[in-house]
Image (cartoon, rainbow, N blue to C red; front, side, top):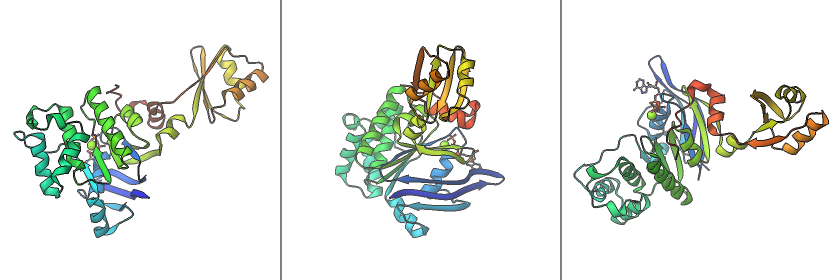
Length: 307
Ligand SMILES: Nc1ncnc2c1ncn2[C@@H]1O[C@H](COP(=O)(O)OP(=O)(O)OP(=O)(O)O)[C@@H](O)[C@H]1O
Ligand SMILES: [Mg+2]
């Protein structure tokens, strides 16, 4: 079942197309990363999903429902954390959640559950103003979880966190996914998306330039490292190799992008043409490489936050 479905979703601000005809689907149980550099349209898209920003054009379905009433119902099954949630600095974490729970009509029991979930149970009586940024972000996540939403939408949940803080968020998201939640998160951090998400849409200048499972993107094609013969000789021997997508020379190494991962076949093919290798290994492509290839080097989002 598709939890989120958009078709040609568009937002225009004057002359600027912040979101330019985006179509994507998020299925139940996916951890879906919406990955793009600053200003690419992530927050605007999330705002439209949540009904905070009115689309200029296009359609949204939530849980298969659309129209004013349908989307309203869908949004009631959705929890969201926006970039800067408001909490009372003088209240404790659990008192802040009590305020949120009252608004949402969630039970008191669920407050302890969500505090447990975000690993704040032992600090719940401390004032919000004494919390670290990571704890604040986790409290926001806890507030999102009140009311037990099926779909969780997070705008840059790891933004500004140190590696330890990011790891905690990653673990909480993994717990939520294991509990059957569907998660849609935006990020400009490649590594975060690569480690956290099952699926990804890569957005640039308001357009989706690739959408696939993370596995498909990072292992769908193999890059093989070949040494032992002159790289130029390897490159020319591979000109007619059907599984080869491209060959690049990097010093004494030829890097061959393959459609399959059959290195034995590659080796046989080369030796059949008199090219003998001393070194042949597959290198898994990271999301970063894919991103760079798709967008050009200067567009790659930051790689900060490597834990
Ligand atoms: N209210 C607005 N009025 C005019 N332009 C806007 C408005 N909101 C966003 N934009 C523009 O739309 C584009 C997309 O912005 P958006 O905030 O959706 O990007 P983002 O991907 O969330 O970026 P970031 O990573 O910085 O959060 C940007 O160029 C932004 O300047
Ligand atoms: Mg944003």
